[in-house]
Image 1 (cartoon, rainbow, N blue to C red):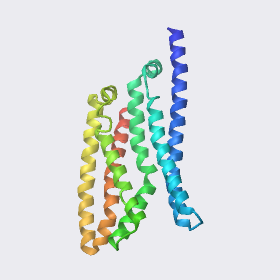
Image 2 (image 1 turned 60 degrees about the vertical axis):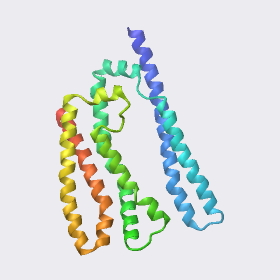
Image 3 (image 1 turned 180 degrees about the vertical axis):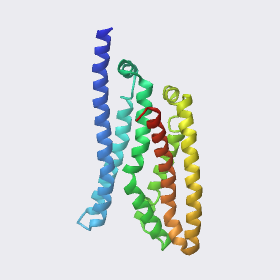
Length: 230
């Protein structure tokens, strides 16, 4: 049994290293996209074709990182090692709650860009960059709400079993109720803002969606910490 556990630990270390490499490649690809936008706007010689090449390479690297990382998702060795430490289910639920709390913080810049793009579009035709940026924050908000609701991995039966016990389902309901309350209050605020300046209400909509989703994610994380005694 000890030899099997040691072999599982070695396999798990190998899997985690490869998964981190895939994540690093994806992060590098994501970094290339805003760099391509800056290059496009720099006005340097050949900046536009180089920006297109850089953006294409970045998007391709992100897609490749997803395919590569998919080969190193948690497996039987992961379960064996985590059970030896004290519980795989608790580890998965804790990591998910933490990711829901960190996602709003790491996406704050996208909210700024979306709000700026919505403001420019509401005050005029807007350029290509405005139209491409305005949807970033709403997209992140939708993904975050789907994660809170447990709709992000409908085909993964193993993950659904880990994340759908009675306690986490109660967390999910509470977090979505908080999101609904925040959305209703926010809609009243945006309505009042629209009566004053319609373009300001349009610019505030990405922020409303972001705050609604963030409230759900942070509430889920808070409930998880409270349940674990943190």
